[in-house]
Image 1 (cartoon, rainbow, N blue to C red):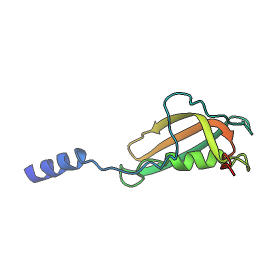
Image 2: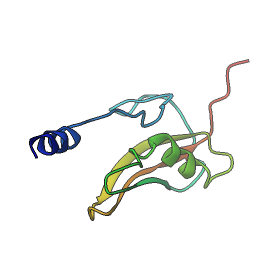
Image 3: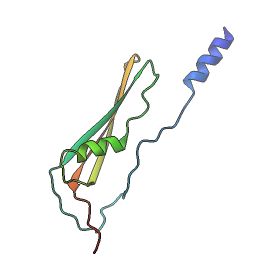
Image 4: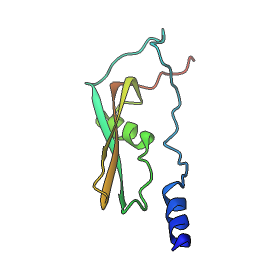
Amino acid sequence: MRRVLVLGAAVLLSACTTNLGTLALTSVRPMPIPYNIIGPRATGEACSYSVFGLGGGPPSIEAAIREALGTVPEGGMLVNIGLTSTWIITGIVNQTCVEARGLVVPVPKSPS
């Protein structure tokens, strides 16, 4: 019985790490970089699911940003991004989502 309790405690206290995505440019304040907004405020969402706490992992921020950019074909970047994370935990099937919202701008052209 003691082994079962120790094993149960080890499972509850275990942890892992996962890459949430790669961001090419980030800043916590507005930067003096000129850009043209080419679309309305775009929103993208990525979710992951787990069953009895197994599987899933965190959703990808990168996937949420890619989905938002997909709403404007000429879009290359999001500026003034807001990220929101939501959880639905039932104990049986759990859902974790991340939502990215931002203004769509084209990728700047390199100077010739």
